[in-house]
Amino acid sequence: RWKIIAEAHPEVAQYLNDTLEAIENPDIVYAGNEERSIGVKEIERGKFLIVIYDEKSNKSGHLITVFITRNLIQFDDLKILWKKDI
Image (spheres, helix red, strand yellow):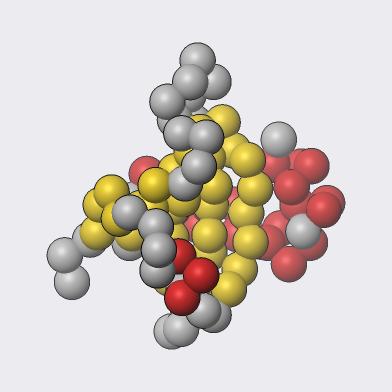
């Protein structure tokens, strides 16, 4: 799945380890739709890796997509499932 995502979004190709970290040790986890989770990991000051994955189905940990953003406002209406203490 990573190969498909990296080909579709070449800007994230170098962030495989950060992608895994966003699932295993995220800064924030939001509740997405369709029982998906949205892991957020700050990869540079003000630059965030967003990892959307499914952990509730029989495809546990199934990666849906990954992208980079500088603006988390798009997630303001989502429920925060977990947030790292800073």
